[in-house]
Length: 151
Image (cartoon, rainbow, N blue to C red; front, side, top):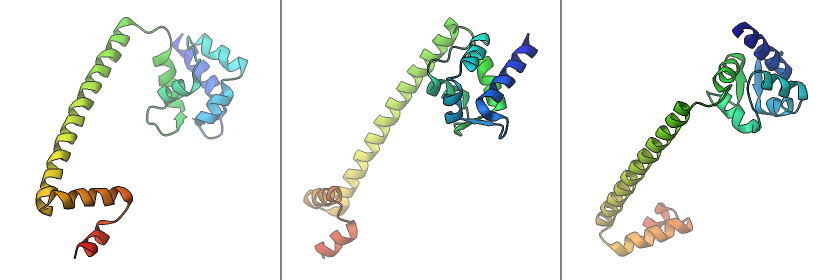
């Protein structure tokens, strides 16, 4: 059964246009996925490809913009069939962890940025000068020009 799946995937990979380069780009995938024969191949593998872009991103593990036969093969085997509860649980857990980690990182960066602003204010000697520099920066005036003007 696994050997038959391997042959189906190799045939599908070839039908998508990878026989010359050994790679499938998103454009090739998107064009190939419109073919009834390719849709049928995916269905026989137990793959429901209704969102070509998302499916391609899941196959392109190295985010290189193209998929090699190895990535394609492993991705199709990994994604076929129904999602299990444990798969969804892991996704939810990972997402919660990422959101918390991103929140901690953002708070850290904001705190450090605040510290840097305080140090800059102290170095400039005046809050007014810091505000002027900030205002000029927002307008695109370079710090070099500002120093010349202040001298």
